[in-house]
Length: 342
Ligand SMILES: [Zn+2]
Ligand SMILES: [Zn+2]
Image 1: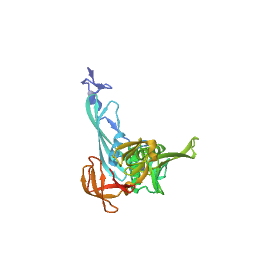
Image 2: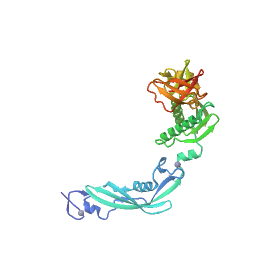
Image 3: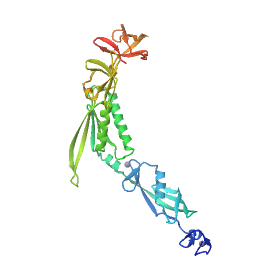
Image 4: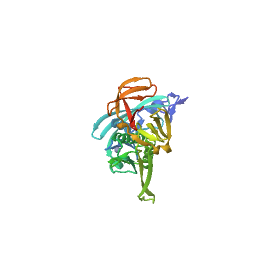
C-alpha cells in the first residue's frame, strides 16, 4: 500500500506519489490552442483536413470536429468521450467549448476548454483544377448521323453516372466540361485513367469500337513528358431493339455487351449469340423507333391477325409461343411481307 505524499492518506493508485484525488486537485487535464484554422472550399463547400485532404461534411459538424481534434490531454489520462458546444459565433468565427470525460487509472474525471475555430475560405485542388479547365483526357463519342438523340442522351447519362460513382472514392475525378459537337459528344475528363475506363465501359455497353491517341503537350520541370489522351468511342449503327441483317437472315437485336450480341430470328423466333468479332457485320434493316405499329384484330394459337398499317388490309402473322399480345404489335416489312417483331 502506498501513501500520498500530499495528504498522507493510503492510496491504491498513485501518480508521481500523489493519490488520484490530490493529482486531480485543480489540475487542467485538457488544453486547446487559442484558435484553430479550418479550410472551406468557397466553390464546393468541402472541408479541408491537413494539407491536401478534402471531404464533404456539414459545416457546423466540421467546426466542432476541428475543435475536438485539437484537444490535447495529459498523458496520464485516457479519453472516454468528447462533447462539443458552439457557444458563440459570428461570421467565419466560432467559439467552441469542448467537454472531455477522462479515465485516470480507473477514476472518471471531466474537464473542459474552449477555442476559436476560424473558417478560412479557399478553393480546393479539385475546384481550382475544374475552374481552371484542367483536363487530362477527352472522351470522344461519335455516332452516325442517323443515331437517335435518345442513344446520345443515354451515353451522356452513362458517362456522368460512371464519373459520379468513381468520384465518391476519388474526388480528383471529375468532368471538366461536356461539349455537344457535330456527330457526337466530347467529355473533357480530369484523369487519363478515367477516360480509359469510361471508354471501356461504353465499348462494352454498346459493342463500340475504340481508339486512343496521345498528344505530347509539354515537359514537366522534372523532365517528364506530359500527354493528353483522346479516347474515341465510335458507336455502332445498330442498337438494341433494331431489326438487323446477319448472315442473310433477319433478327431483332436483343442486346449487346462486351462479349457480343444476342439476337432473335424474325422468322422462327430462335435466339442466337453473335460473337463480338462478328458484331461489326450486323447491318441495320429497320431502326427500333421506325418499326411501325399495327392494330391487332384477332389472336388465336400461334397466329394473330393485324391491320396492315400501310394499306389497312388484314394480314396473318406468326407469333412465338407464349407471346403476350396487346392491342398493337410492332411489325417489320421484309421483301414486301410483314412480320411480327418479338
Ligand atoms: Zn492525496
Ligand atoms: Zn471545392
